[in-house]
Amino acid sequence: MSMQNPLARVRGKGSSGGGAHHWRSQRYSALILLLSTAWILWLGVSLAGADYATARATMSSPFNAGMAILLAGAVFYHIQLGLQVVIEDYVHIAALEFLLLISVRFACLVAFLISAIAALKLVLGA
Amino acid sequence: MSTSKRPMSPYMLGPYYKFQITSALSILNRLTGVFMSVVSAPLLLCWLIALASGPEAFAALSVWLAGVPGKLVIAASVFSFSFHLFGGIRHLVWDAGWMMEMPQVRATGWLAIIGSVLLSVIVLGAGL
Image 1 (cartoon, rainbow over the protein chains, first blue to last red):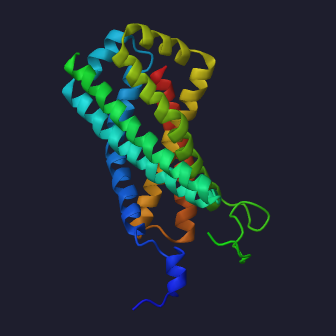
Image 2: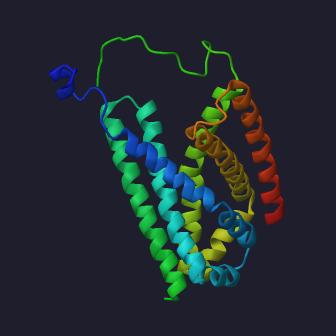
């Protein structure tokens, strides 16, 4: 039995019931990123200032392409979860909050799709 | 949703609380995360798109990255990455229930600051 006033429930007050999923997702994506730290640092240092041929050759390796796609997924998922919390904390105009939350989700999805397509194009040599 | 005037707890930065390493690093972890979300990750995406688009696009981006604004963005991104990395490790350790005593929280805070500055210097030095 709920102790909540039915009117409060209808008005959308109280727990959404989805907090634990968000919390766990943020940690799981963080763990993937943490475990990939060495690869990220290696890639960044070895490709800093690299010319086109070198960068192209590096990203043509199936391992690097796979890591790039995995990381794009983890990064943009982690970004979506993180920006969501920041928006929920600081944006108090309901319509603007809703618009920002939807925009962040959409932008992260599009960013992941473009990353994956670009990485696939590089590894498949199209 | 609610428009009623309810008492609110004061914001952690401001005149109501002492400025201290715990709150400063908490907001810095957020700031570095937001910075990477709106600047660094889109830049990496641009790099990948440019590489997939061909030599001309890649050369144009490389020229911009080699300039002063590009170098500043890279340096800020490397520091943000380093700090968010150590800040994230702190959070994961706390989530496991460890290092929650105040002296430990302050000590790991200083470790995160020193570690992120060192890592930034090493990465920027190695990438030059």
